[in-house]
Each structure stands twice: as structure tokens, then as C-alpha cells.
Image (cartoon, rainbow, N blue to C red):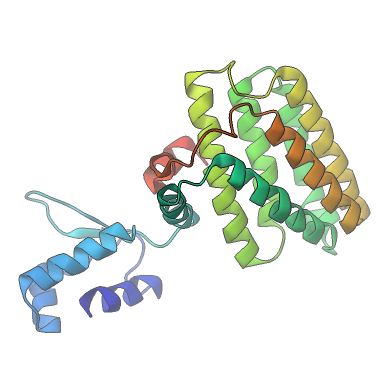
Length: 248
């Protein structure tokens, strides 16, 4: 009961992001429950990523409004429990993300709101082709820009969660082994050319050709990521604080 009511207050914005939950004593009085009941409610909300309980003399709990990173982490926890491999994530992205590309191509305002931005990202990516980490970051930015402009909030949440799952693994590999398991310079150039073709088709408004080009591009680029067939989803890489630190 306590966790449910506090969750509703957080989700509705009545307790804002960065705000604090009432003190234990106040909650015990409001809900007419014991201390252990309040502590259990805090434990549940912390597990859900909605609060951070401050230990020690400071005490209290800080509220975290729901973020896409939280959804990605919860999805990752379930996937790890089911021993899902990264190849499985890759196949899902190959099928779902191209739908976002098609939806972007169907937007009446695409030439004003999206196409210039995608072209600008491509120019920066080409300039950074020799820098593995920066090139990967800009590649993620390109894909995120398309997803964020597809016009459907459910698709945005689902695809960005999958993108975060996939990208976190790439960033992890890039930190430890820049020349093993990551796309070569030639593959990065080919990826940029794919992006340019996708942008051209979006600009022309050819939704089906844009969707197909995106699917082929994802198949090719993920095939170039050596080792994805054997690696498994690791939820620890996509904890919300980790995602924020990595800039995903």
C-alpha cells in the first residue's frame, strides 16, 4: 500500500524528480503503519530505480523520475536472467529500428526538422572516422536522432532501450580492446555511406526504400561487430548511473 501510493505520487509528478520523500516518521503517521512497512516500501521503490535511499546521518530518499535508462536497465535484468545473447538484441533492432526510419520518411516536416540534423551528424562522423570512440558515439547519435523523430512514443522507448543495451556493450569493448571486436576503419566508412543513403531516402520521402536500406545497414554493421554471437547481455553495464556516465 505504501509503495503503491508513493509510486503513484512520483509517476504523476506530485513528488518531482530530485525531490525528497517524507521522513519515515511522517509516512508512518500518514499511512498508520510500522517502521518496517515504510522501510520495505523504500526498498521496493529503490529496486525499481525510483528513489535512492541515503544512508547514515543524512538519511531520507531522493526521487528519480522515470527515465528511458531505467526501462533499459529493467529490460536488461530480465534478459540477463533469461541468458539472452547480444545477437538476439541485434536481430530485434534489425527488424524494429527500420520501422522508425520509414516513419521518419513519412513525416511532412522531415526536410526542416530532421534531414539537416542528420546531414550535420554525418559530416562530423566522417571527420572523426579515424577516432574509434568518437565515431561510435556519433553513430549512436545518428541512430538516436532517427528514433527520437519517428513520432511514436512507444516505439521511441522500446527502440532506445534496445539501442542502449547494444551500445553499452560496444562502449565496454571500446574501452578495453579498441582493435578487437569493433568495426574497422573501412567498415566505419561504409557505415557512414549507408547513413548518407538512408538520409537521402528519408529526404525523398521513400518510406519503403528507406526502411529496407536501414535494415541492410544494421545487418551489415552488426555483422562487423565481431563476437556478438557469443556475448550475453550484462545488466550491470546499463544501470541508469552507468548509462549517464557513458553518455548513452
